[in-house]
Image (cartoon, rainbow, N blue to C red; front, side, top):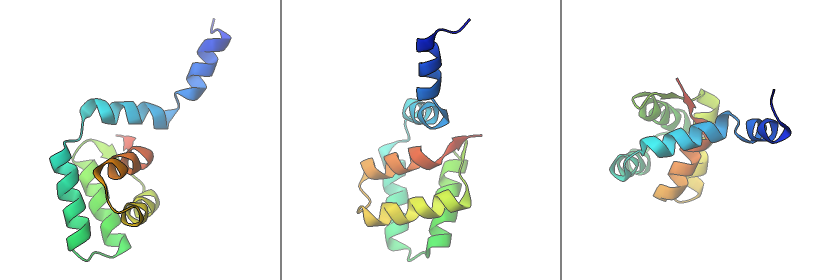
Amino acid sequence: MRTASADKRGREDGHGRQFARKLRDRKIHCGDLSSLREELAQSGLDSRQAAELIGAFLGVRGYGVSSYAACGAASRIELVGCSLKSMQEELEKVAFVM
């Protein structure tokens, strides 16, 4: 039988937080994030192409992302100036384990 605190932890540890922990555990290397940032900044991609690049980046690491979420993440990454920390946070928000 689950206790009230176990139920609370279950709600708090929803899919997004579980993914965030797994992504941090796997540690996407700063060099990989830096390469993605450079590609997004220098390639002149439109939002759809940037979303596809983000999807491919996550895909080779065992994660998926919806096209809609990837497009939103690409826009937010562009708006916040593409710091590595902000990129990591955005990827944690939109990716899911495959």
